[in-house]
Image 1 (tube, rainbow, N blue to C red):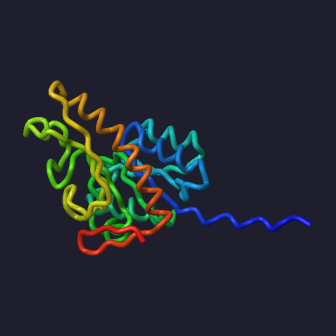
Image 2 (cartoon, rainbow, N blue to C red):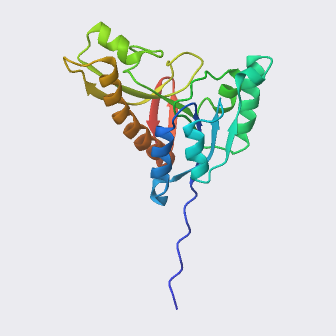
Image 3 (cartoon, rainbow, N blue to C red):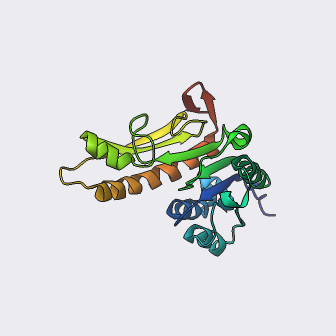
Length: 210
């Protein structure tokens, strides 16, 4: 007589949104290959065709969808279409992995407490698309990356985690950006795993693991 096999824990469902090369997506796909990670990527969405990120998803056998803003008469229509496609996959977490579009009210109403993004600066300092450049111009001694839940502002949501990178005297925007990307990717993978395995609460601006 053999011992009973323990049931496989339910894996959390991740929908990842990309606009470009999908290096963060690949890191999540690699991590999710181990069942102990606790999550699986069930779909990848994009705002444009022909990206390397979509190719990575297709190579991994993950369903994909594309919604281009220009294909909709109004930005709100695009937001509704994106929301519907993401909802179809019943995600536990939605991850912006280099997704270069701001979502709207419908999306945030559906996923605002489980939509996360990563930014290449130590928020609330240096929000926007030029975090490393602005940090260097200000003369800071440390930079880094911030993982946060997305709200209606620009890089203003409750902070999940932060990681620090020292600024070197000879840093350029390019060299600093590359060093931040390395730790940013590791932070994203680590915290997605912790969130899905432990659960979380958001109280005001405080994010806590259960």
